[in-house]
Image 1: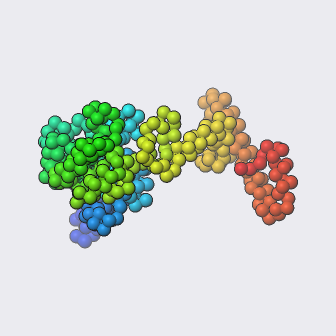
Image 2 (image 1 turned 60 degrees about the horizontal axis):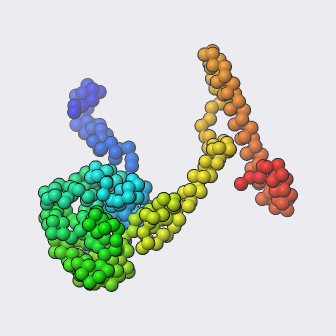
Image 3 (image 1 turned 120 degrees about the vertical axis):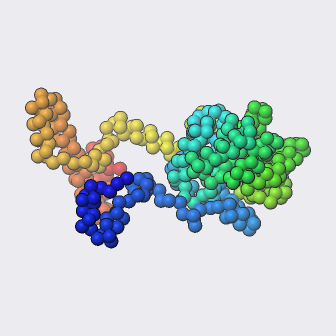
Length: 387
């Protein structure tokens, strides 16, 4: 790209230092940086595999939360969560499917990018969706590369411990990508598991959980998720492994825990969603109730005309401009529109005067509390009691 015309014309008259000063103001910083948005991730504040290894070595529990978008990622970041997992459970939690199977790689990449914009501190791990890594090691590596390059993730997670999955995990690690394993209940395998069923409930199944976790460790995984297995089985796997275990419905003996953002916040309050929240999840809030209450209140206020009032109609136009505007409308033959303008302006003026009057009365009440009860009775009677 050449110099702007004004610089070409005047460059001969400019000293070299002056020209450099002009060029310095011609920023080559990407637009998204120039126009704001989240600050670039600070490598000194980021959680890395080294940090997780240090926590594991010291016996400090690792916190993991599954999230799927920018707002939830910001919340995780603010709370100081260690790992943010962009899970394929988005298929169920966000997209409303009955299983995790339908979500595509392109859809997962959208979720990954949104989370990467919001989370500066946590280690970011993206799930490989069903159908994107089972065919061959080459396919697995290609998908993992896209999750990092296009999704902005730090690592990937894959499910299962069959020979082909172990081979895929090893190939991805050898390609220079960190891998989190996943054993026990693996939702992508519900076809062969016969549904969302806990694993490790008999001797053979329990041994398989431990052996599979060890095989994933041998393949180079930096941690393993243990989902829906009895606590003693999870304790055995945790003891046998040299890498952290992350439990979800696996009891208190794992190296860390993971829950889904929407589940732990109690966001799914609709009866149709109640079945989605798993039994092992503790709800630390009931955000769904708060959301529903706010939406109902909003609907009622719009219906009865109390919202938006003057306080939420902030953009002003002077009386002179209104008169001129109405005159122009009449010239255009829009008499009805002019009349609506006049009526709206008068209504806003009346509401503003009522608010000013009520505020001044409220101040008097604070100064003289002895008259408050009488005033309250009067205002209730007139239907004007302030909230």
